[in-house]
Length: 328
Length: 289
Image (spheres, rainbow over the protein chains, first blue to last red):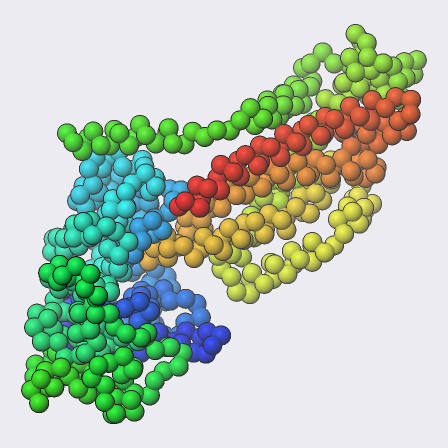
């Protein structure tokens, strides 16, 4: 793990709220190597976005972060603001969920691209413009030169997300964080955008973190998957191993909740019953236990820690992992 | 080829969508404003009698070929005074809100973006300024610094700062939480760049619409102050002082008060109409995006 480009060590994010302290991210350990892809999966409100903001050091002002975020040998949590600013965009870039709001409505696409490029790279206007056109072409936008003069509202959602990706890629970042990059898009566009991200990642040899609530998104496109629940990583494994043999009942439930094409029409989806626990009132035991089909007495009193199964890469936090139960 | 066609389609469709029904009232308002600006700017070139030359034999004269709008209580040409008065009203009416929009806009954006203690100080001091009776402040300042157009503009400008600050801060507060600001931060933009390039173009639209309403209000306030004798020093004419002077002969020659009042009414109405239309044009666009 020492070769990792980014490693998050023991990260805790606390948000003070009127109802008490909200622990959005709870002792998370993650690592991504250069050129590798990590998927972070979990339902809404489980801390995925807070974790990505914590990596970028863009948490809300009131939030408290402890732990370390090591990027390329530097601890981002201790970096002075000016150094951090230079790192963002240049080495770390983000694609946000909703391209409707992540682009400035009153600036042209060209302005937004060119200014970002000039902020970090020493290029004159003509060179930056040329680079913008190349980037737009690279992300599959037809007639890129005309697009430079257009405003975001003149483009479709898929096109806008391509522009957002072009902006993020503009300075050749080493790590790209895609925070639900396809959630706001049509299903037909989703695959295109994900393929585009995968292609550009390969070409630029950058590391990528894909944050999503959709296990289907990470299935074929990531090297490793971390499943988050209530601010904690509850299962982490190389992608093939995870899908071959998932250990955590929550991962299984998430997968079961995906709509499938081969079941009869009007079959109810096996949704996960109940809601995630109130993050301001942490449970004593396993936070998934109230909703877990396999929950036993011990699950309500003791918190399971991440531990390994038969392979050292496969970690999970459960007293009653699925395979063990099947074997017993 | 298909892609080229697509882009052509979109570029031709874009201007058509921007066109909206604006109405003749808006164009009438624009027309009146243009006329008022034109005569005020070109006053020196127009073949007008001097606005300060008195003709004691022809006091309160009625409409004539020589004096189109008659003469006032001291025998000065009413039309000429009206046009030179428009100058004062427009200079004060435009410059004072300009002071307000610059200082108030900057303070409001900084307060809305940086929040924290700076915001508390700014909002607090603006509340103090709002709570201070404006007429007393105007009285105090003119008493100490003397009556002049410059002093009057400064007072009215300072009095306008809180309102512009509030508009700018409110717009910035909502915009600063939008994802594109976080996206800009995530791409390594400096605070200066975010404020000037990401936020300012967005805040400018509501500020500009409010600026036009501010012009209308300032013209009225300048008129009221001049009416009370706190405005521009005589013999310079302004619409407010003309109404004030006309008050003395309201029973004999009511037109001396009503003509400048009508000019002020139409001008303020025109600015309000333009400001309202502009706000209506900019608001839904902002909401849609």
